[in-house]
Amino acid sequence: QVQVAESGGGSVQAGGSLTLSCAAPGYTVSRRCMGWFRQAPGKEREEVARMDSLDRSFYVDSVKGRFTISQTVAQNTLYLQMNSLKPEDTAMYYCAYYSGRCYNQVPAGAYDYWGPGTQVTVSS
Image (cartoon, rainbow, N blue to C red):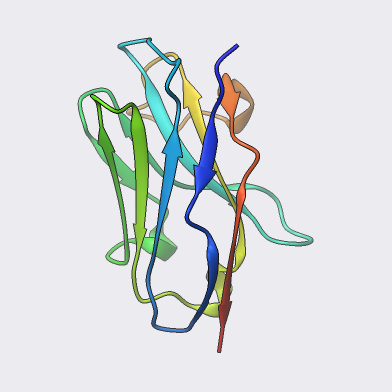
C-alpha cells in the first residue's frame, strides 16, 4: 500500500502564498499522473492541477497564473505553489496519484492513491 501525505496547509490573508507538498515515497510507477484536488464545504471535489510523467502541467482556469505544480522525481514529492490566494481558494486540498496517462483530464475516481488532505484557509 502506497502512503501519500500532504503538508503545508494553513491560514493566510488574501494575496498571500502557500506551498503544499505531497510525499509518496513508495510510489514507483514511472508512467504516472499526479494531481492536486480541493473540496470546499458543500461543494464537489475539483481538480486544481495535474502533472504527467513528462512534466506537462494542466490547471483549472480559476488558478491559472497563480498556482504552479511541480515535482522532484528523486524525492518522489509533488508541490503546489499557490500565490495571490483568494478567499474562494479556501478548501481541503488533496494530492493523488494515478498509474496512467493524463494529457486529457482523468476522473477523480480513477486515481489510485490519495492523501488525507491539508486545509487551506484564506481570509479577506
